[in-house]
Length: 393
Image (cartoon, rainbow, N blue to C red; front, side, top):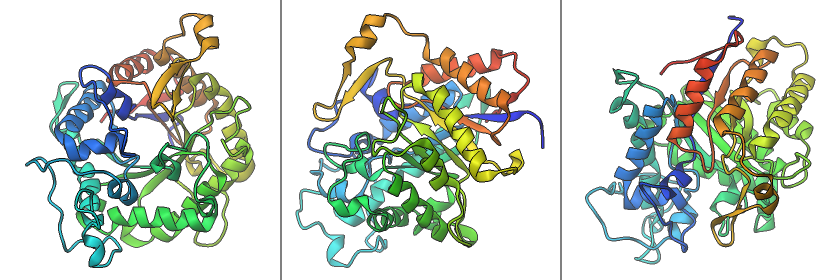
């Protein structure tokens, strides 16, 4: 294989971009859907944000489904119908009975309605490539990644940064496996939807058992023509670089990559997201050491891709109770931070020069925007490193 490592650009923080000018979105406090709520209220706005990321240089887009779930829709009060809303198909199988196809409360969404909205996120992202002119070229095909957040992302308040899952059964491999399998079925049971997905992304995982559960789900899922490339990405809010449940990187990467049976399949990519960029370099080094311990002497062609999209919060911390970003006093006292795109370019260049990963998928998470992706692409292009090449659309 080529000595140069391919680098592919992911998009950035969808929800926080919606909260920022010119959109200035205010998410409903009585719903756990967050940006997925726009699948109901304003798919046109979501489409515009997707297109902005493509124009900035992203060649992978995450769907607006990170916090989408049947439970979340069932707890969300309906808004007045508009012509922009997708129509629910009564024949769709989402593992429900006929009684389930109607909501027990007429003012919230049924399982069938929820599935229809969730599936609508896939063509919405895909159309952003075909309707956008990027770098003087129209019709860039790009790649669509199905965004599936941790179980904690659908809780209210959210718990993907704490790992404090309720009920306790959702801290077991069995409970999490059942939940993730049922949500994934919403997408892979519909052939048109599934065929439009290029990657499946399991994001912001705070619990080691959730990594194990997803490995089991995808081992069952990735058979025959339904196979998809997929990645697992974890969140590391702790100063000691452990998961919220206390698991060290060595155990996290082992769970991501080890063979637990003849049918187990390793993910296409493993990584880190929604994490302070100041921690990223050390975390990647620990990922590399742990992956080498599992993979041994395997050549780079058999390594996974590194997937990383740190936040751009510049020391701000998201308060899940108030649903607001709050300035960390210690960070504020240190003064201006180094530009996000410059710091990330240096980290990614160093990772590429160490030459371990098969490729690198890099983008942004919370508080990063299309402008940040544009600057990141420009900085990577200006890099004098011979260790990587930047993929086009």
